[in-house]
Length: 272
Figure (cartoon, rainbow, N blue to C red):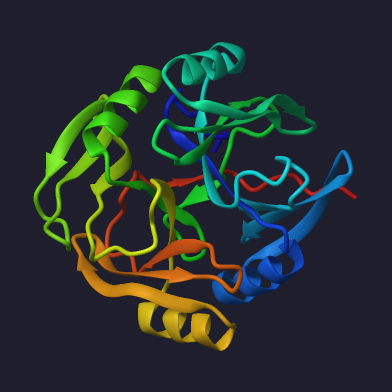
């Protein structure tokens, strides 16, 4: 099986930006069963997190993005990152980190959209993005929670050329829009209300699959995190929003069927 080739606009990577990367590494390694290796990026240490030898997420320290943003960051594939960064700003976003080449990976940039949600752009080269989705411990969905759903959808449509479809089976009963590339579901946009606290301004939420939700939430508490919203019986399985000990929101879901198509890359070659 060859490495995944992601379409421009697909969510291809997630990264936790935190001033306390050591604590975050311990929390998520224990919670999600990750293996973690350290890679140097300039003066920063990047923590590459994997499941069964396949990369699923990263943890960066405060220096990589100049201290902004904080929390989980969703990166979207793009085939011309210089042009994409320019368009993201011209549409009303703020460029936080200009396009920067990352050795043995590709070129990344970070943006804050007009409504306060931070996201990344990524032009993959040596590393296309995540190497597995949907399996326990791996990324399975990305969702924008926002009080400005229509304007937010319009922004990302202009940037990535998304189609949309509406869903009426959301656990909260609030309007939900699925962003699509052709028939491929890419991400969700949820209209926030008072049932989803502490998510203002808009925020991209990372979903990780877990084997047993109740056990995972109990482990969150044991490790110093905080359950916030849930459990919620979602159409793809029960889910729970939690905060890690650093206060960063993530969603855990006991996945019953894939929110996005299954993908598992061939394992990386072992080098010594």
